[in-house]
Amino acid sequence: MTLAFTYQGSAARIVFGNGASADVGKWVETLECRRALVLSTPHQAADAEALSKRLGSLAVGIFTDATMHTPVDVTERAVARAAELGADCVVSLGGGSTTGLGKAIAYRTDILQIVVPTTYAGSEVTPILGQTENGAKTTLRSPKVTPEVVIYDPELTLGLPVGMSVTSGLNAIAHAAEGLYAPDRNPITTMMAVDGMRALKEALPVIIENPRDSAARGKALYGAWLCGTVLGQIAMSLHHKICHTLGGSFDTPHAETHSIMLPHTIGFNASAVPELMTPISDIFGGGTPGQALYDFAKSIGSPMALSDFGLSETDLDRAAEIATSNPYSNPRPIDRISIRALLQDAWSGERPPY
Figure 1 (spheres, rainbow, N blue to C red):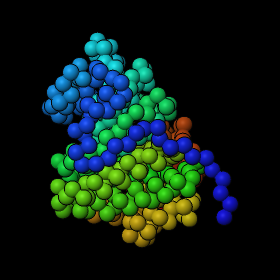
Figure 2: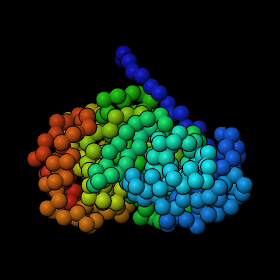
Figure 3: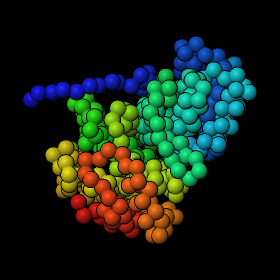
């Protein structure tokens, strides 16, 4: 076999282990920073306040308005707050919403970032920033948005609700699944994708049975790191385009949207590149890749229908139009009619035909 590829690993320093989050202050100092602004969503405001107190004199305050899909107006307020406090770094505590806000601040100011993930989002190890403005979500890639340090502490995920664990884990699996057929894939990203998906497939059913199983939580977080790393190194395709369309233009919930769309988009593309998608069938129980993912998602209690999250059937025409107007690279040709049919299946929660 003749190989030819390029590979660029993430610039983020990865710190992984139970209790690792206790060393946030050490990493603030390692970055030669002295004025950290702690970020979170409103839901995790108390955790952000506690972290700020643990940092002591290394923290200058908190900003707790991080919001799903990273609205630009929220970012502008956070940038102003960071400037007002003279912050020289941000510590992003939480999931993809908080990580996205930290990235958006860094993109505008070059401020240094430490991320402490509490979900399986995976975006903390990518150079990708998605932002929403005027009802549309756009993405960009820049080394400026890659965090300097990511601290994975499985103990912080022990209290992650089971439902959120499921959708967050499936969101991570989507990152790796698209990496299998990306035009710029390489043997390293493929190995990471397969290992990451397998780790999450093994961990999520255990977490459902025992949410405080430390070993399963650690395996899931490890899988999320691998899947996120894949996303950061490959070109996104149909799955992420549709999810960005639904989230940015219809405000559907991020992780749930990825969970519902995953079997449909992967099944759609698997018909074009079946040999590349064999690992998905192998990992998730046989059959076609789309159906294997659907059956696994259903078995772990994932939401299955877009109709459950406020999207009306009349929205599907517009969603198909947006998703196909400026499509990402994709192994199977797309058109509005085929994507409209795919969205119909996802809206009604039907098992994909492929």
